[in-house]
Image 1: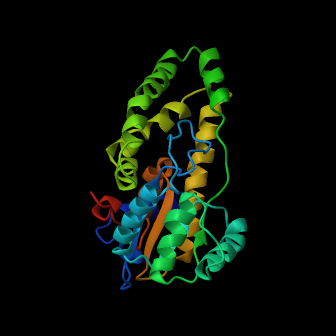
Image 2: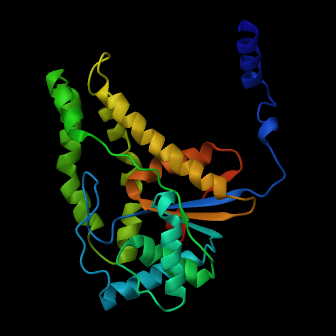
Length: 267
């Protein structure tokens, strides 16, 4: 056991520590496009208020976004849907290509299907992993444990959200998507670590709930990565709350290179 630990430590300190993961293959480019829900629904803690995205003005704005995303020329488009729905989703996509299906308002279809069709793709990829989050249980545990600091941090986040959501709910579809991929998404990731502290060592509900959240995002990363081949350009269309962890996993994984979608989205 000690010999194994010693070998591991020597590898970590060696100047050639990454040679074992280096390849001659072209890096796989990844763009994680954080999105709000075009339907206005969702099970997030805070959900954006939206108008009718099937209205002509919004459809024109969506088309502008599609034109911009097409410039990245993704080779695979991946959406927030569990793999058990992939066949039925792609059946609808084939019907859309044949002129037999009108796109629903959901961003999976408005952005995902429309872009895939523009690029001539045969299919899209469903890469989600289902999980929930027990906010009420975490709040109750924090209250019972007297964790006023954590409850205060959570309260401050909630108090700031109306202004943030107002910003994210204004302007064109492109402007909303730019806000959904802006600095606040990364800066607010600390909230999950606040939640992780809620509860006690004997009943660590925060750890358990955040462990499920990390697991979900790790599963999403793995599902996407399994489909990737050298030279691919992946586009993941996902709820903005997933963006931080997904980009972190891809940045840390050998063979991938994360590209900021803000470089593509129209101003």
